Amino acid sequence: MSKVKIGIVGGTGYTGVELLRLLANHPNAEVMAITSRSEAGMPVAEMFPNLRGFYDLAFSEPKADVLAACDVVFFATPHGVAMDMTPELIEAGVRVIDLAADFRISDLEVWESWYGMPHGCPNIMDEVVYGLPEMYREKIKKAKVIANPGCYPTAVQLGFQPLLKAGLVDIDHLIADAKSGVSGAGRGAKVGSLAAETSEGFKAYGVNGHRHLPEIVQGLDRMIDGKVNLTFVPHLIPTIRGIEATLYGKLTRNVSQEELQELFENTYAEEPFVDVMPANSLPDTRLVKGSNMCRMAVYRPVGGDVVVVTSVIDNLVKGAAGQAVQNMNIMFDLEEDAGLKHVALLP
Image 1 (cartoon, rainbow, N blue to C red):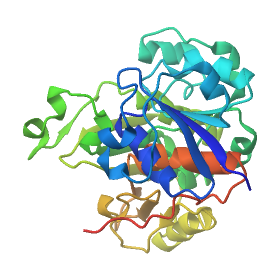
Image 2: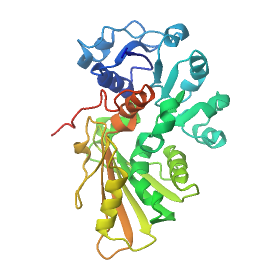
Image 3: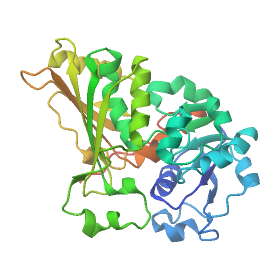
Image 4: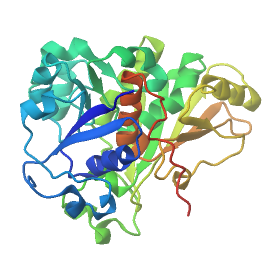
């Protein structure tokens, strides 16, 4: 088939360069434009030498006529950018995948309270599909706008989904204890991201409220068509990539370790990017580094009534750019793993 013509708005951050890395070897992708107001005119390979030989493009101003000639536009931008440009793009027949949070939360009053700005295009929210393929694949196929999930929400929702769909845990007492590498904070120069600030340390943050909390709760609520009570505590760990989420739920009925294992394996048996590991496995962020895979394991600690799930992803791939490419593949009826067949890096 003909190649999908792609525009990327905001290509100078970690998710932007990760999109370029994944699309460089995508058999059906042609990147037509990559924009950056601050770096317009600079060759992409000058900023990111790892892409030498793969792209002859230079960064350009985000011009509507250029982007309107694309089949799909990815927004790898700060919050608030995509909602300003998306209505014009979808009017031109372009499909949009936003890697920021502009469209992730359907209740715009909740969105505005967490992001501290008015929402720019409430009239198109009916066109938006939340881009978690393991839940919304059929809707993604026809979507005009994809809200690409956040990194923590991806790991947490995938880990809880089998338990909630089966009605096996007390929905009033869910806990997500999650950890992320420093790249989750973005590429901007911040004191808190300096090596001297993050090395040899490990701390919680956002305990009183993190922007991913309402997104996670929204997703879990949809799984049960009800309301959950979730305690979500993120942590910063001194690594570059990776998210590990340890999830806890109190069982509502007596199920064995073997039954839990079977439930998880059956839930994700047909999913190309979820790997339920054998019983007694310990998923490690190194096992997904550079790949679009989510690996998880489920436990019922001996003698207890609590189920524990540990879920790991690469925050820049399945937690961002890789999931965005996966969504593009679904939208354009491509092989779902096209451009995403990377094996995780070890060591």
